[in-house]
Length: 230
Image 1: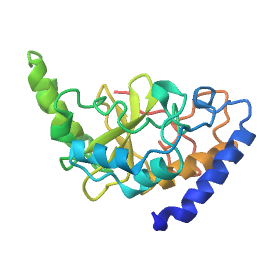
Image 2: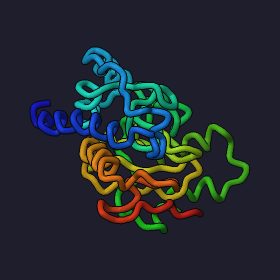
Image 3: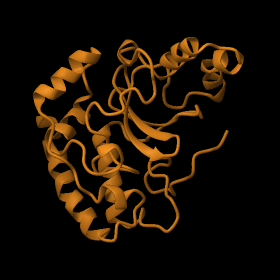
Image 4: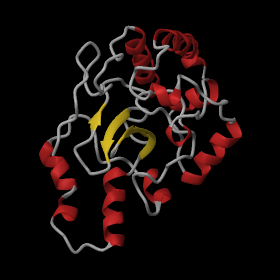
């Protein structure tokens, strides 16, 4: 955890500053989470989760739930964070993969940053071209598409954010649509950088808007843009 210590201390300070700046909770989702977090997770709980799903959680995410907070009072008991916040450890693990989650979550992910539209279409081809697909077959295909990803929060409607738990992009956050629009990876290399950027944009006032903002769908310094529709 030492590698993240300075950043964790910054995040603690910035959480208080964000709460002060957005005291009216105008940032999207802030009226639900109110910039509050629950007690930190125990190392025992983290290890039990990792053993259950045969994974090693990304150190950046693990550092957050062990040192900053785990859960809160937003939707699904989420902690303060982008959109409706960050799920507590173990909550909504099967939000992406409904069946045999343990089988797929430790698999290498098949999605990656800057993948082409054609590649995403190929991943979904079996589902799109088989209207009579059984529920079991559908769930198998979904497992293949979203393997290696852990849901960590809701953005409202069918949109969620997840974290990559395996492979070369381990620790990176990705924006997903349960209706299978093409995933959009965030631009930060890990969870803590993504979370700290959110705090920076709250504190700067960029996310305090009357209209919904889509944090993380554009690079830092650019307008947060609505995801493309199908």
